Length: 170
Length: 170
DNA sequence: ATCGCTGCAAATGGTTTGCATTATG
DNA sequence: CATAATGCAAACCATTTGCAGCGAT
Image 1 (tube, rainbow over the protein chains, first blue to last red):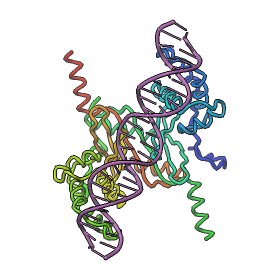
Image 2: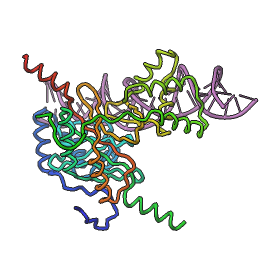
Image 3: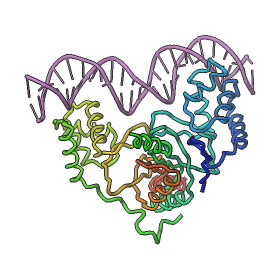
Image 4: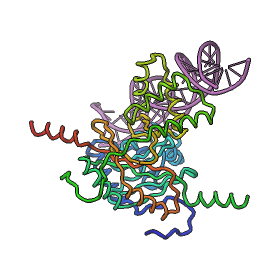
């Protein structure tokens, strides 16, 4: 699978693009159901989030958003992202660097993460067989899985190559 | 759902007890190598940790430790556990409830975790096949795995039974 | 006698919250 | 208009750190 690297030296190609339109309408439903208001700030933050590459931190989002509206506050971004998480539109991740990161909730194509400890890059992977084994283990324990977290921490291809190049030229 | 499982060896078996003696001597080595001093407080904290059931928080440890020495401070427990982690004697876990938990570093028998969101209970599981698949995925991405995290969040058997009992008698 | 360790209190830092103000439905 | 949302600053809270005195080597 996915031998296609396209040479692009960046990490972060998703297995599939989430169904943005579906998520948009789920969000609309959620907001009207909960009587949440659509403000200029929220629209801006949400659009930014939907258009951005995945795994944005609050600071990432705030930086982008402030290019359009310089006086948006931290709290508004925090609250908006919490709202998206509560509505099932975004997933929160804590990858261990102290920041909460957000990604679109792509329920149809669940994926897990490879986190490079050198460059901070995040790649995604899918492995249905693991999910299946996981489910079997849970059953064995009488455990009902509601959510799971599977993360591999280490060194990505580029960082390894960089490290090797450095060693060789020494 | 059934709980009977034929097949597949001992997926659900409880992991073996870490080799405490080996860890003790590794710790001794580490401390003398790093010229770390063996104080009364450290001895108490370390003994408590080695004897305790796994996944203790700082507060858990402090509570126990203070029964023997009421004036031990938070900072000392934090620092001692950091030392154990740095020396490879303990592993730190962040299961999402805001507290760091510690367990003995049992390198021979790696295990992952089932976390009950209702009662906070933590069970352990081993599944070598998952580890293997994981490694294959990493290879596919040119990724070098240094560490990983595999956690299932949900409801444990007891909590499910409790919940069902409650529903039935209503 | 060094120099690491302890305990306290103060600092850190990402996140949350109280409140007066603004703006949506 | 009622009331939800904003922005600021203060509060939170687990964890870390500075420092003066203590104690291990």
